[in-house]
Structures are given as C-alpha cells and as structure tokens.
Image (cartoon, rainbow, N blue to C red):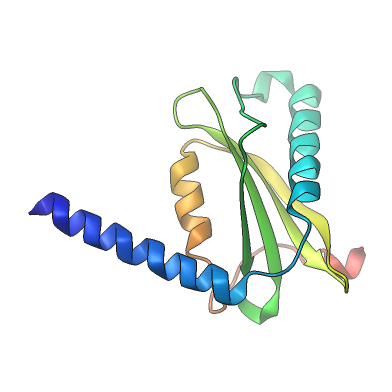
Amino acid sequence: MKTLNRWIALSAIALASLANATAAAPAFDSKRAVELAATLIRLEFEKHPAAAIPGVDFDHPEVTAVRAGSGREFVFVSFHSTFANWGAYAIFELCGAPAHAVPNGYGKVIDIGDFRDAVAKIGPATKLALPKVCTAS
C-alpha cells in the first residue's frame, strides 16, 4: 500500500510538472544550450581541477525550460556524474526576441536527482533569486 501511495504521489508530481512544462515551455535552441553548458562546466573544472567532480556524463544531459515569476524564462541543463549522485548544472536566462540563452550560473550539486526535482517544480508563481542577466546582454 505504501508503494502504491508513493507511486500515485510521484505520478501526480510528474503530471503536474508535465502540465507546467507544456504550458510554460519557452522556445529556445536546446542543442546550443547543452553545448554552452558543457563548455562552461568543463572550463570551470579546468580552472579549478581540485573542485572538479569525476565522471560527468556530458553526452546525456537533461534540459528543462521553465517560465518563473515575473515572466522570466530559464533553461536548466544538468549532467549526472558517476560519482555517487553528484552532478553538474548550468542555468541560462532566455533574453530578447528571438530568444537567446545568456549564462546565469553553473555549479555542482551533491544530489542531481533532488536538483532536477526542484527544477521541475518551478512555475509561474515561483520567484527565483537569480540575477537579471538580460539587461546586461
């Protein structure tokens, strides 16, 4: 019964995330966002090799586009690592028309699954404390 309740709860979250993504997914070049994300993360790992995490799988990214509070649109690109549940990510804000991705941050996380779950819950009512990079681009 506990497994069934967990499955129902996870299904509801997945459906809500899908509905949010469908309703709010901005248009962008996902291939370009993945290339930019991989480049940013690789450069950071080269600059600070002691802080790099091993086994980042740059060939299998997860790309999530969201529309957050104030109508701001973001693209989150995350990569799993072979090192426990760690992962790396890059965030882009979509600016202008046609939209172009401007880097807004990148880093690593201890649990990539938790990070991806949190990103999936971002919606129009979510206020993100991320810098506004569109005015600078």
